[in-house]
Image (cartoon, rainbow, N blue to C red; front, top):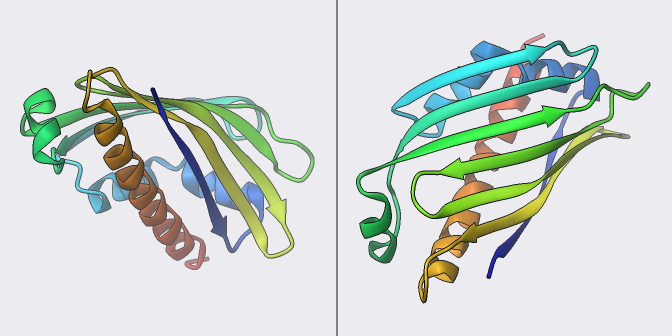
Length: 165
């Protein structure tokens, strides 16, 4: 069993500028702090003009339902890898996204950055899978809620960073 995730974020700047912010080390650190990370490690390889990989490792407090607490403990290690393609002429690009959580949970999907008349948007689409008999669906649903919350914080923080210039 797995739970689908489909979230669209909108940004008030073109795809090139937005991508520059989203892959900026200082922005990523600020996003991690804003989402409760207790510890963060960031690795960025490549550059924004070509294919780029962003790997973020975070230690988060386990704000999970009681049913999941016994599987994860007090904290959750999260490793997220975004493997972005080179940009198209308008800055559009796609990524393969994997997120591994300590415990029995994983996300696999894509992120598509596309130009829009108002700026740009990213659609994150994929599936959360928790391989736990009987309660896996409950864990997946909570993870989907938390992931959408995380992406909304990212969207809001990025908009503030984009408004600085």
